[in-house]
Length: 199
Image 1 (cartoon, helix red, strand yellow):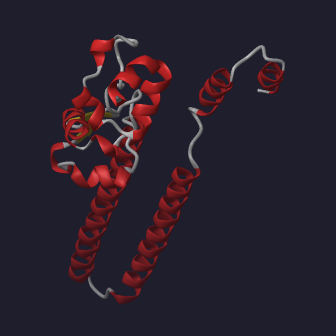
Image 2 (cartoon, one colour):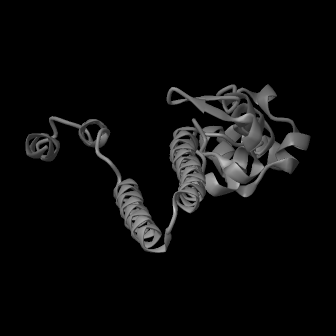
Image 3 (spheres, helix red, strand yellow):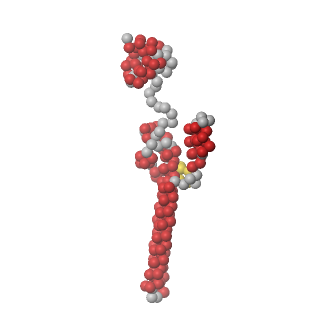
C-alpha cells in the first residue's frame, strides 16, 4: 500500500489504482458489525447452556419417582427443541439480512433500508449464498424508482446541442424550454446559434 501511495505521489499511479488495491485488500475482511453479531450469538448460546444446566440441577432436586422424572425430561426436551428451532431461525434471518444488505449495496442502492421496504421479501430466497427472485425486483425498481439508486453513468436531460453546433440542432421552442445551465452550455459551444435563437 505504501508503495502505491508513493507511486501516486510521483504521478506513476492514479487514485483509481489505489482504490482498487484497497478494495482488493479489504474484500475478505469481516466487518465489525458482523463480528459483533457473532459475539452476541456466542454470548446468547452460553446463556442458553447455563440455563439448561440450571434446569437439570433443579430437576434433580424436584424429582421423586421415575414417572415424574420421565415427564419432566420430556417437557424439558420439548422446550429445548423449541429454543433451538427459534435460535436457528434467528440465525438464518440474520444471515439473510446481512447478505441482502450486501446485495443492495452492490446494486448501488442509496438507502438499502428504503429499497428493502419496497421489495416483496417473501418472494426472495437465499440458497447457496445466491438470491433467487431479487434481481428481477431490483430491475423493476430501478426502472420505476431510479432515484433510489446511484446512477451508473451521467443521467439527465439531453445536452442542449448534441450535434456539435449545427444550426438545425436546437429550435426556438426547444431553446425556450432550456434551463439556464443548458443555455450557458449552448452559448459556450455555439455562440452563433445562441445569438440567432436570442434575436
